[in-house]
Image (cartoon, rainbow, N blue to C red; front, side, top):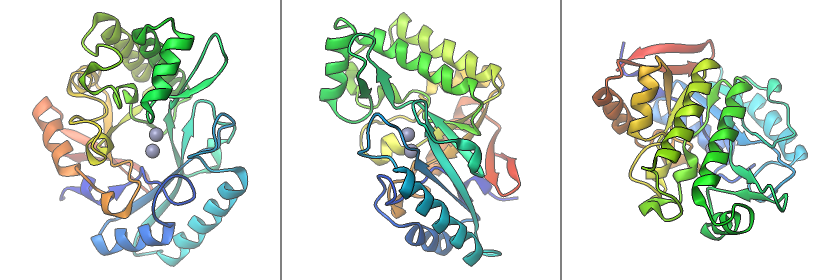
Length: 275
Ligand SMILES: [Zn+2]
Ligand SMILES: [Zn+2]
């Protein structure tokens, strides 16, 4: 029994959405790296924004290519067909081997606009100014309410739990240490525990230079452990060199926080792996 968690990467984006590589390129890299499992998780179609997600026709191509790769790599590398489903998506996540449930948007209560909260500072600033009376903490509360709504749908994996902090380094838009922020995050965590979600421990904030910490951060991971929650380590890879970026560091941090095991996703579902 080795470190099986180093051999399964299931939060992976391709050129069909906003990733840099084709499914083939990623499969070859995974196989050469000695991975056991590669799961693709393309961004599901949302009507709010077509910039980064798959259109319905691209989704069909994506599924067909993954099906081909599954056959080509049979016996060599487990290929899983997954989806990163967004709260505002109109795709049906049931048509996949597994799905990651994520909240990427806030819907403005005044303007009805969908704001992407994890990319452009200008978008988050506009969201706060135009729809939330200049109060960034209200946006954070709305974000965590959205995460709780995703959790209630019981995804295979609950995606980047505290993504709202991604472009908030230095507490630029709201104070992550404030009681309101902590309360909102904790309430969503309890909702996730109630739905028996598996949380991903996502290394992409570090890989892409946005943050020094994981999604979720150490405080939330401690609370999750107290709730007896399970985790799976993921990269949210958007390029082939990131398939297992930071996995060993994430495992070390989980151990330090008191975690004794992580879950590893494969063809047969989740299996526990000692840390
Ligand atoms: Zn995402
Ligand atoms: Zn992703």
